[in-house]
Length: 143
Image 1 (cartoon, one colour):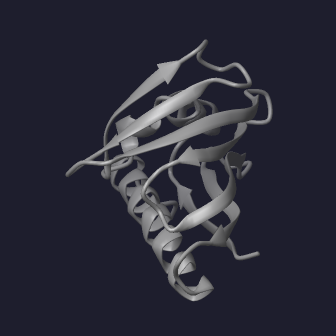
Image 2: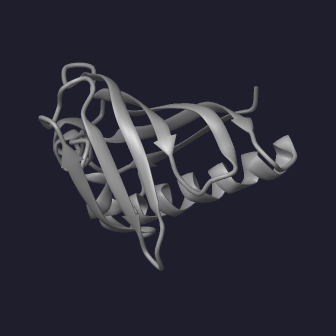
């Protein structure tokens, strides 16, 4: 099963960064490919559904599987969408670097569907890179 793990170190306090990106619908605030996110259910509760409306059209439906504000992490699965993947499970985590800065880690495992594994990995890496690069623009890279 292919896996992708990417991270970026940011010049942002981990608690403040978690407030900005830790809400399940907040991804629309920082990921440039997402026009808007809609929540079905109670924000921050296991089982909450988010519908991501993509820039240029398309929709991805995701389910919140676990969230821990104290650990600054949430895990989610993709229920449906246009990506050539299945059995997608992912995690977004904000790590305290201990010096007033943070590291955002985004990781997943999935099955490629209709494309070779390496192509599916590159698609997911591209999605993560766009989001992490935009966070670096918003919060600055750790120096």
